[in-house]
Amino acid sequence: MSAPSFDEIKRPLPKDEALTEANRCLFCYDAPCMRACPTHIDVPGFIKKIATGNLRGSARMILESNILGASCARVCPTEELCEGACVLNDLHHKPIDIGRLQRYATDPFVIDAHTPLFAPGAATGRKVALIGGGPASLACAAELGRRGHTAIVFEAAPLAGGLNSYGVADYKMRHETALREIAWVEQCGVEIRCNTAVGRDVSLDSLLTDYDAVFVGVGLGGVPPLGLPGEELSGVRDVLDFIAELKTRPKADVSLAGKRVAVIGGGNTAIDGVTQAVRLGAAKVHLVYRRGRDEMPAYEHEIELARKDGVDLVLQAQPVAIEGSTHVTGLRCVQTRLGEPGADGRRAFETVPGSEFTLAVDVVLRASGQEKRRGFLSGIPGLALDKGGRVIVDDTGRTGNPKVFAGGDCVSGGKEVVNAVADGKKAALGIDALLKGN
Ligand SMILES: Cc1cc2nc3c(=O)[nH]c(=O)nc-3n(C[C@H](O)[C@H](O)[C@H](O)COP(=O)(O)OP(=O)(O)OC[C@H]3O[C@@H](n4cnc5c(N)ncnc54)[C@H](O)[C@@H]3O)c2cc1C
Ligand code: SF4
Image 1 (cartoon, rainbow, N blue to C red):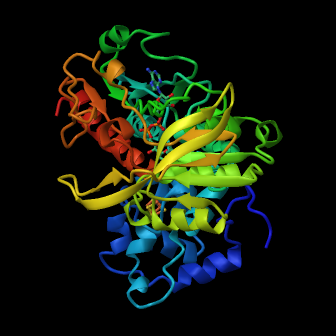
Image 2 (cartoon, rainbow, N blue to C red):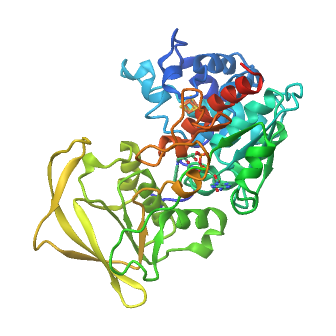
């Protein structure tokens, strides 16, 4: 068996396989895959178009619903969404390979070539500022452009795309692919100003005054400190910084050859940390989680990937200190005992006295959830946050400030790219109605 690599795990479908797969679809009426997709792509419709050789029509049908259909085809947890809902599962057959068919239809127009499939709408003279250049804002901006409004995206980072460019594991989607898709979205009439942080390079007040509406798609922040002794040692990092670095630098520069790595957390981001540490050549990789495997928030198929990669799942283990003098040499943990589920449905746990042990490691990655951008968000007049720090919106994506809409991770608290796209599009329809005075 070959060592895990950064090559895409889900390879593109060749034409003959795509046609065979398309012809396996039952073209269900009221298709459950379509309901399971947060952007409600007409899955049987686009697959039928592939089967009849109308690839352009198929791509248009996908992108009408989901402008980031090319990246979603690669990064969506399809096992949990459209493919998980496919009726063939109930008939004990393999579900239709919807993600790869979606890629087959969209790549020729969005990634391989930049074909303009949609013309911008007749200019309305109204303009909208979008804060953040991630999937939520890009989807919102593209939809606004199609409705004739000027949409300008302000992105703090050097590149747009948010976590599509800086977070998604390379073996799902390469950095270059995300950038190709963004260039196509720009070609659809969206203007993106990178290296422009709102609140630093341009004031929030000026956006609220100069634009007819504002969309907030700022996502989430970094991983908060764990508060452990030794956390300041070199070798201890936020997993998001680690992933952003390996996405934007040559792999040889970020090699972990021979290193022992511990990733703290049990969600999908922790899995991305361990699987990529393995691919960077780490000698030993541990995933340290304080509850058991059944309680891990990560998807089952993601946990299975980590297991196949040879990751050591250190379960029911609570980190208590990071050891070392200047550089980390070990992660001290204590065993936990699980109790009954609490009010939040999660099982309580207590530490087991005398059960301490140390993992000898050279790198510790914190992957225990992302902070909310409360500081920035609470500076927006009228916008309210819930107790968890998420922006409160109505069912059109509108916040407590009538001209400010929001969507994506800053509203959901952290979901998937496809959810952010759905939010962005919904908010664009809300903004369009506002601008038309409806
Ligand atoms: C490591 C990791 C891996 C993931 N992998 C997957 C996956 O495989 N599949 C999947 O579907 N989902 C995945 N997700 C989740 C997915 O990436 C997010 O749900 C999605 O990107 C959210 O989109 P967004 O636009 O809300 O926010 P983001 O993608 O976070 O984009 C927000 C943008 O706003 C910018 N910004 C913030 N503040 C300002 C400001 N003041 N001024 C200007 N710009 C600002 C940020 O720089 C950022 O670019 C992953 C998440 C993480 C953390
Ligand atoms: S966008 Fe994602 S969830 Fe929706 S049909 Fe495509 S692959 Fe499935």
